[in-house]
Length: 191
Ligand code: AMP
Image (cartoon, rainbow, N blue to C red):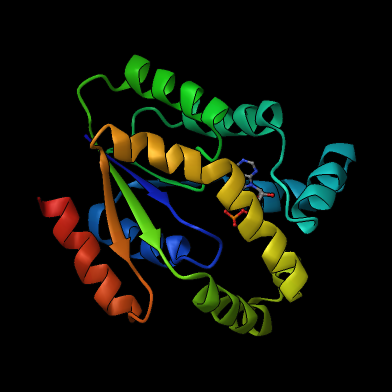
């Protein structure tokens, strides 16, 4: 079994790489961002709460996101492997995540890939994505800035944790085409 965890700032290319990974390796994709966006469509109090948090560039609480993650992950334990896209994003989520992997897939091969892109390029990419996808959390430079700050404060410590244990492959995406990045991702997976 192969699990791939994608880390990266907003606009770093996680979604683009995930689409290619699904096609090539037939892995089950869990994007907690997509799960949140679907939950918002229900328009109940939890959906409204998630929308307000997403629009402000903050993270949904660990309690809520862990519950949403486990609902989907636990219902799909018999797949070939997972692509974890946007989870875990805090140290608390990482603790739960490690327990989940250890309990369910003690023998799996786990690849952690960090897509590292300069802040300057993230602003340019997300402005373009906003024109195409009209995501409300990409809608202004202030919103993008808030998400990048949240990433630095809460998610970089998770990335450091995996790097310190020698478990992280970093791919620099700045100035590269999606095809260049994809070639490097495949190289990391084949290693
Ligand atoms: P993404 O599509 O991965 O950029 O996620 C969009 C938004 O969903 C984030 O800015 C957060 O508000 C929320 N979100 C997604 N994944 C998580 C997570 N693991 N923990 C907390 N909030 C999350």
